[in-house]
Image (tube, rainbow, N blue to C red; front, top):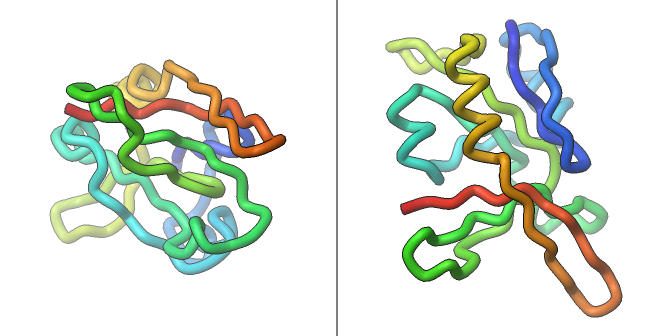
Length: 128
């Protein structure tokens, strides 16, 4: 199935099976599908991440979730992200071209995060 993988700031199309093990391998552990974006929900786009990504040393930030109202950072997603879709039963399915364009549009902005002596350029996901 066709998915998008965000790793080291780069969004790339990838063909994988729809097996749990493939998703776990890409994100590096147990998966979680957080609800972060109304746009993703409306277009049946799932963002699959490592459920413990914030707590694993060495994982870099990939997405800053930013409030469209206050412009403040609401959350930070650490580690690789897989973007896929789902069917009516909740099974993971491949993305169509329209969904890929939506993901690329929603993650087009980047922001710089600074923490002591480290700087990270990450994708910005603005939610309203």
